Amino acid sequence: GLETRATKSAMRPGSPPFFKPRREQLCSGTRMSPLAQAVIATFLVSTISLVGVVFLFTEWSARRGMIFMSFAAGVLLATAFLEILPEALARYDGDGNLLAATLAAIGAFFVLERALHGLHEHDAQESHAVPSGYLILIGDTVHNFVDGVVIAATFLVDPALGIATTVAVAAHELPQEIADYGILLSSNFSRASALWWNFLSGLASVLGALVCWQFQSFVEPHLAWVMAATAGMFIYIAASDLMPELHHTGPRDALRYTVLFFVGVLLIAGLGLVIPGKH
Image (cartoon, rainbow, N blue to C red; front, top):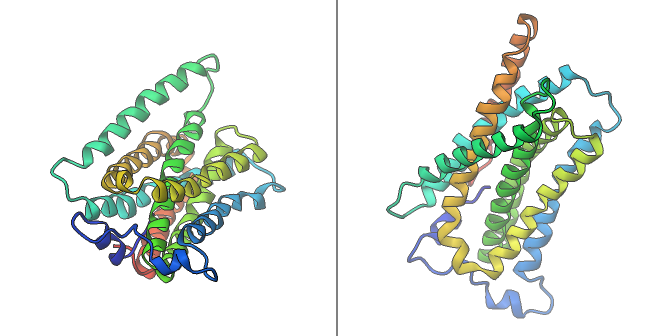
């Protein structure tokens, strides 16, 4: 999720209610309402999750799966530490320790993964990447929901601001959705199933926009906590599930996967530098 300084400033307690739409936007018969603009924008962003369609007709191998997993680990960690956590901390004005939500999410995912391993204990050869498929769907759904809230919030401030935020979110979503699709395939999802579930996860951004509109007073003060928890989910998936898998490769492939890991990190970091209006 991304927003500009104007958005974050408007969301601080004591500031004017940024969720309140301009009267002329709602009353004009010739202009689309901010809610409609936000729903359309978030739906378009959610279609990025269909990027996996380009892999439907190509052969999938274990080596290709490891390539995606190494790239995904870098993308998830960079997204958590360079994008989500800084945004959560910047918008939080409370007295509590926001990182407690990050730790709680890591602990919750640990318990959830143990339960998932219990369901699959009949297969002793099963990879740790199988539970990570379910975990990435949960984490990415929450992340997409937050994106939807942020996009809707900026459209309620100003349509131009909403469009700029949508473009920024879309640019950052592309590499992450590619990584997520690769994780699902490596977790024994079929190609069609991975594509379908990834798209459903992407549609959470539309739900976020609708919730932002309907429950304005509740969403605003809790958004930073949700973002901090989302970061914890991504950190756990990358550090506990994906990175250990990369140690099970031979020395010949180790350098390739290490490079791809840092490619994922640098891609997210680079997007943060070239796309304005983030922090």
